[in-house]
Image (cartoon, rainbow, N blue to C red; front, top):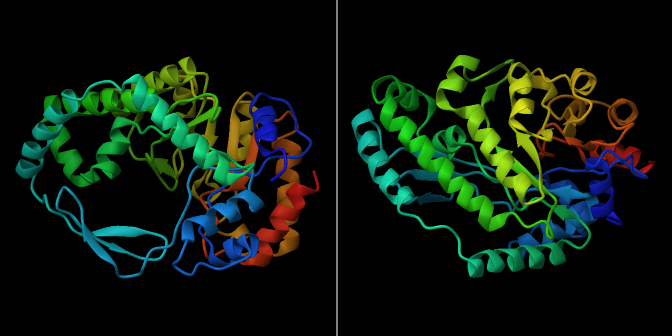
Length: 353
């Protein structure tokens, strides 16, 4: 959309822009078809998604392309996956015992510790790839640098799962800490490769560490992992590259926001109201934070009336974005549960300025 980059930069710097920028993920056939001017047909679905992002949003962090429901594949670890239209899951795990996982982790540590730092040529290649994507997106901003915390990468990137992780944390703590530190170093290399101020002024930490109503771990356990030190290291690396850092976690992370702010984060996403995240309390307590998301998709966007959606959108812009630092959007993503009329009511209200 017009002036998207400028609007996002102003908002993130605490300047109230002419209108609040819209930041979101589009995983909704009707919404994408409406803004792209065509439906997915399997010929160039990425282009369809990119056209929709350019016309519907000011910024995003993901270009979603629908999969074939029921498609299966096996990953490098040996896990068997099955796809649905907008998601996938593991239907058979290759590693099922703690002993199997411990042996695999030792191999993974050796691999991680042998990796070299990105070369100047590799960094320049990544930067040019980002520039090409930005050109395809037209005016929409895109977050290219999306590092993960060590615990997030263990649980979801390497698919260890919370139960096996817990057993190994109890029985093989030194091994798990060594693995965590090796993953963290890998993420610093990734930041060095992908953090380019001229292609995006934002980075986003992926770290789903909460359920609805509470975090996955106690503060004591987070500290034992070195979690907040990990977040601080990511923030320092990104800040050194000139990027502001948004912390992403679904669920209720209210109990650890103080620690995340102390670690150096600049903002939060996606602000899941249905899980217990109170965006108005967050704004009052942390006026300096960039709030990204926040519009309840579980109930309001999916089940509310257009009038109710317009009313809440106006309130959020008035109370959360009066001094900038608001990139408004859904509290997770715009899924197929959101009727097109409801999304248009939200977007139209934002576009009024």
